[in-house]
Image 1 (cartoon, rainbow over the protein chains, first blue to last red):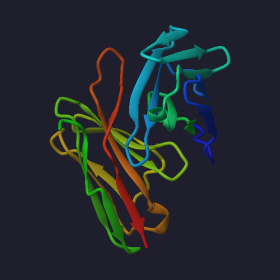
Image 2: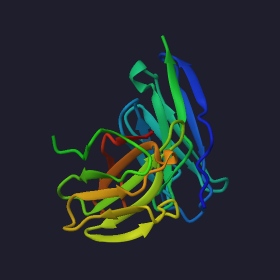
Image 3: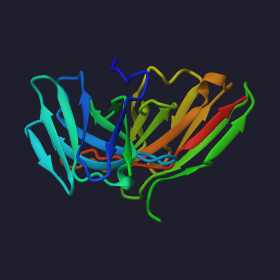
Length: 108
Length: 115
């Protein structure tokens, strides 16, 4: 089955700096990837998506990069704000599989 | 509010009891998903429906778990003879399958505590 992970990595960044959150996936058949943000006490919320025929996609302050060769996905957040503090998950594998998540803490 | 709703938000039950959770998806969404999430982990897929048909079930979904979506609208997830290991957040999500995109909209979850 797909790996989910046993503990949550944490990334701490200063307010205003850029953040990069990474995800390694194992299902090479995945053709659609999504990043979700989950704030405490809430369900995950869609941030941005990318198809496997693309390498990069930009949204408002967020960019997703896809490297299919090494099965790696990253989420870049520009000018990180306190409201960005949350757990971020990548999603793939017919979109049933969530990566282990990364907790982003924004320091004042 | 036209988002996904779940009821109850919290449930405390004794081991061995049965519990049932309800999910109301976004009205025009044809797909509905159930996930389980424990502290520090990502959501784990349990099952999903397209309209009223249950199309896929995870091996995590033991015989004690059953899900229904009788009219292709709301769904229920029942856990029979609950065990302490069932304590978790149960998340429901819905989506509209269109052009291969399956962005899921999540509800707030039902937190189950089995004592």
